[in-house]
Length: 238
Image (cartoon, rainbow, N blue to C red):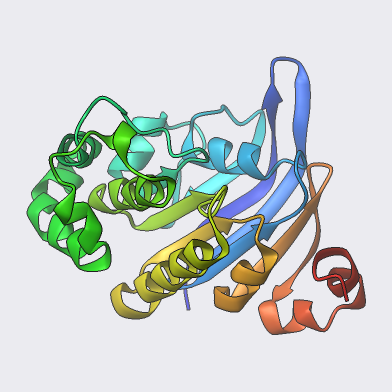
């Protein structure tokens, strides 16, 4: 498979505080790549820097064989590099439809809005039932569905998802996992997943990276990680 996203020696942070200390990773096209680690190790900072919300201090970000390190976030989105942020970040006073429509702000998204909208309703029939309901009145699970759906109507080439199961009941965590797996298997979508639910992440992932203190300390195919004693002890309690 070809490499869709490549990150080399990425350094970034907030203000004068360096958070990422030379992060390197690759995401193969059509796979689910997981980025694992405890709170505060730099996972969200990695996604924000890749998406362009944060500026890279040094290093390179290549997407679809093009260096995008210096491109602003909206230009990266236009190329199909889409982030579903932690905490959903919906427009609560707007309806489900309005949230979805506003997410299709790029040319590539507008051109396929109706087609992607049908895909979203196929994945999340409940959103179609709630189409004219204010996003802020949805349940937590429904809001997470809408957050993912908003990313999908942006017509992603790669969907970066930051803690999609955060705050959800165990059954909903499983449901979200099945949706992500379905997107890979049926749509061929490439996913870079940051997820606190390690069990869910390893059950659907193809390849994994483990972060500690702003650095990648372990990587490998999920099957290989599952055999690693350090990984099993630290993240699976085995």
